[in-house]
Length: 130
Image (cartoon, rainbow, N blue to C red; front, top):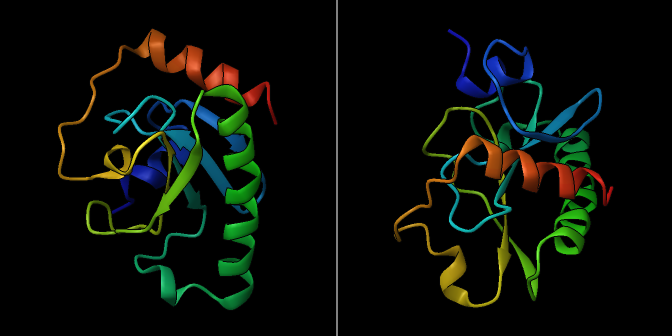
């Protein structure tokens, strides 16, 4: 069965997509730690990041860098934090999180519940900075 990320990639369910190419897609987390929290996902469905082929792993980070620069321009923050946890969905994904303090990337804290309109606005701001 396809993961929720594959279903977003295939446009079977909606996602607030900020960037995409033939190998990767980046979309907003619908329950973000902070506004602008973005997931970067290879289109190839591989559960564990270190099971990716070396060229895909390297390209994932280059793609993530491009997206991170756009997020930083669109969302006021000091840095973009990066985390790979991989326990929530069995499909490799990188979290890009706008940070003003260490607490902004604390995955044990309560998540936000933005509206679809709020997510659409942030996604548009990020896309416009790519």
